[in-house]
Length: 302
Image (cartoon, rainbow, N blue to C red):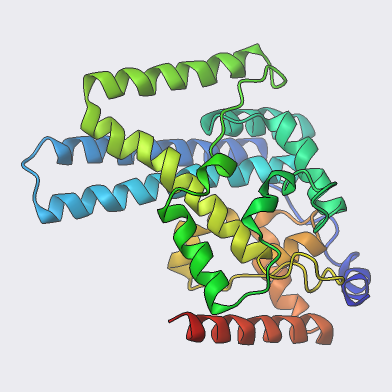
């Protein structure tokens, strides 16, 4: 298998890459929290003024931005589940639990499910990450019709039964369960006191924007290639321009193929590892084919 060959050639080279210290890891989490709270505050101030086209556009951009920052919390949970976010194992657990609570999830449940994704990718029965998504047909080969279906699905809200969930489990501890309940109560109180700001800056970003990004990301990561036999073909990278990556692919999660090949690599090193892997002919060939397929699909979808 080509994927096995690539992993064998680079496993030792990618071993022991540096992870974030406790202070840096906590600062990254705090930065995402500050971005969410800051965006909500700015949006609230804007909504106190008469609604104009400009103000409406600002609020829409802020709602999307908040959704992408929630995706950032989710990505940190993912990194913590592999113990690659922070140097100390226990820091990954509590930071992962905090970030999971910020998106009303459970770190321990996520980790248990996600590890099956790496062991059984493409097997709907054993891959618990994808087990509940069978009806969304991520495995269908990409065509103009399939791409349009994936684009339209969130706009119709058809993804919500699969991607909108609240996990009040106590597996992360009573404190994090209390944190999730408190966030729900605060969001509800905000909705009662200031319904329009709450709806536009809290509820829509979480319920629709964040869940839509998660769905579209799954489509980009594995859509149309989920059942490929070789792991070089069953995941893909999304090499978008840097500003788009920073906004919609927080924490370098656009390098999903690299992650599946080397799940032990911390997120800050994924781009560097991708660049090194391009020297491997099998990896280069796979990346080139993926780029061509993406260009073909985009052309025939428009």
